[in-house]
Length: 377
Image (cartoon, rainbow, N blue to C red):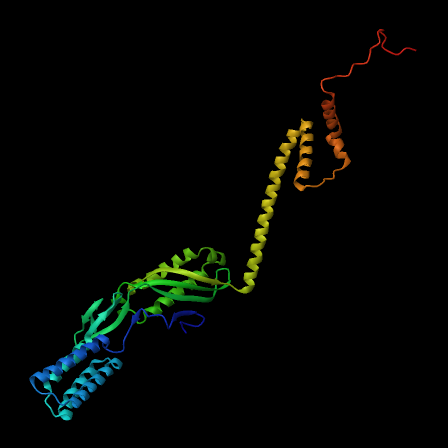
């Protein structure tokens, strides 16, 4: 389940997420260490009572022990100093009435235990606590073990100083070119001053989320759709600087803001897809045209080379026919005029004549001995 911040604002915080600050309704946190401290004080009190005076029988001692533990269990539910004082007063009033034995030594030690046990704290390495003394700020404590001063000290909150992440979104926000979009983003932040975070802001987690969401909406409204899709990193840095300037006086720094998802309407998505397809087809046609132009230039250069050398052109034509037959493994049909244009008969005939004639040459026909140049009549 998510906690919505406002209408059409998206999901910001999850109930399963560990909160950055844990506030308590009481003045202290009665934990396992406190219960163990109280047990030790009960044992010491009963041992001292037995050494100095006398203890009641085993049954009465068991009832006494169970009553004290029941009172200690109440502190897990109601961690208030007035409840501690009421338990101590009831202890001193009930002992003489129900047990008929003077148990002042045990009661004194147990009273000290009830006063000190709620103040025993063990703070984790990543936690800090803000301590108030008589309602005013006293100091920030942690990590490690500490002891609160009984009755006058109270804990304002336990602050997790590790890096946190908040999921925020902006639904149906209009870009500068009036396109409705849904944007999900993440804000990474941490608390560097627990005192300011606790004392300056009532609910700084909600404040950080709302500030980030407001900055996100402002960034979407000042950018068109193309900028929003192509410049996510720059817009994230812009939102981070805006939110960090607002949260820094609270003792909180925004480390980074990252866009997680940008959703646009289905109709616009189809239109953009068709536009992208048309642009790709346009580029393909331009590239094909450029290739045709380059091929034409190359052919023109080849034509200039073959223009003054018909033999080379014939050899090139014959080579093309031969390559076609060899690669395809079949026959190539060419028009009869191709043989005349390539003059294949003359070339092949000249080759055959040169092959069979060898070095012998035919004798020239006899020439008339007369000096006449024409036939006789």
